[in-house]
Image (cartoon, rainbow, N blue to C red; front, side, top):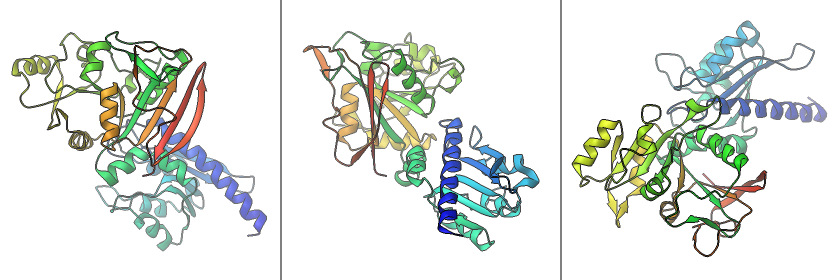
Length: 374
């Protein structure tokens, strides 16, 4: 292949991998302990490359994306190229590994993005493909795939979910006013973006202070995405959350987990349990919830990403323990004033080890995002 042909093929590979990554977001937050992976089957019969099969990890985690894409492609998969956003699995369950399925289907070439840290897979999926004579190209758009699947990768490596700290700041760096409940800082367009972030997370976490002051529902309120609301988690050691709160009243639609200590009032526990709340037993550290242990428990429940939405004390605790993996800051155009609650972090004071991913605007509001290296 000439240098020009190689350059052209590299551009094609990046284009289809970018499309596979967009596809993989379809079921983000809905695939349980498995990541949401995208797969495209592409063949070129002389008239240019054409997608003949698409697949994304199904809700609940099965079937895998490769299985879905191969089924759609059928006989057209033979001699084609498969674009997979994560290394195909290599371990046997009751169904064959995806790497073997690609071999059986007659795929000629596999282009992969992120590597899988799971020891049952890492390197083995690609080895199966190469042993069968399939051409394998690794790490195409690997950084983009790693960022998109950070929750799965962090859960695999660190045995806890990815922690995404989201804060809305006024122009003077405040996140609200003490004792005044929810304070509108950003506009409608930015709020819709927050709903999309919730739709792709496995859980939303707040402290009891935020739950009492704001009485939030913490759901996805976008037409057509209401069923994408993730589990809500409240740090409430002494079970102060009222049974009449919006969080409790919505448990028939969206799960609610309360992180409480063993010494909490049993009558309050019984009332909340009867209302449908679920409990996570917590250990206490310096008067608060022991966060590393809590995150281990959330990972055991199948959560790969947790969106921390408030308040300042909870955000500070996650930052102090070095447990934040991604920082998302929305900033509105208006000031709150000297009586406002200062944000524990702002664009000029990002902890070491983070790099900026992107800046955006949503109406009059700005947005910035930082990621810590995995």
